[in-house]
Image (tube, rainbow, N blue to C red; front, side):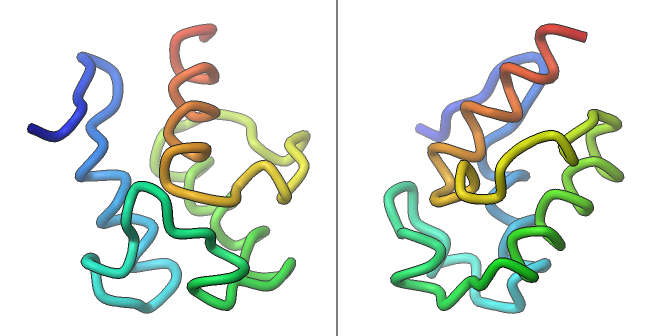
Length: 85
C-alpha cells in the first residue's frame, strides 16, 4: 500500500517527479537513484526543486540538490518541509 499522510501522497509525488524527469512513472521506484539510474544532472535536480516549490508551496531553493537523490529522500525532505510550515 502506498505511503500517504494527510499532507503528502507518495504516489502523487512519484507522478510529479516522473513528469519533471520525463520518464515513465514505473522508473521512479522508491530506491532508484536519480543520478545513477535516471541520469538526473544538477540542472534537472534544480528543476525538480522548482517544481516541488510550485506544487507544494514550500521553499526548496535553500536545499542542496544532492539531497534530491531518490523518491524516498525527496519524500522525507518534502514531508519535513510541509509539516514544519
